[in-house]
Image 1 (cartoon, rainbow, N blue to C red):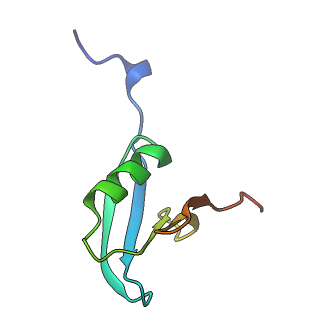
Image 2 (image 1 turned 90 degrees about the vertical axis):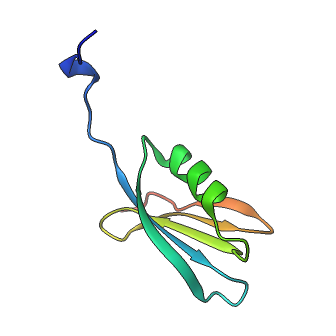
Length: 80
């Protein structure tokens, strides 16, 4: 069972930043995930205990989604 060229793809990189209730940055990291949904799950699971907000950006620093502890995930519109 070798690797088929059609099955090979680039894994996107996401920049994740965690903030506390005062919106002070408490941690940030870059993660490699298959898609944004997987990045959201990973960020939620690995968030520090005092996390209130999570921001996920692409490599160009465009915000893709933001998590608010009281409102859940809100994806950024894809306006150009």
